[in-house]
Length: 70
Image: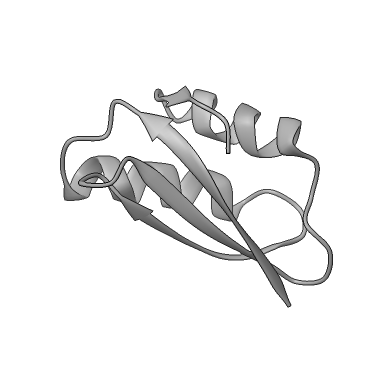
């Protein structure tokens, strides 16, 4: 299992973290997600290999937050 960290702008509370976690967790190949509003990051664990960054970006943006890269 591998993991990657990504930056997300706009999270300010536990509810924000949960929204991003739920959206990204639905992406194919994602095992789990842990968001931190305090750090402005998400840590994504993958089932096998990391998925394309564009898929993570799309999931973050669909949840209403801004994707800010790795």
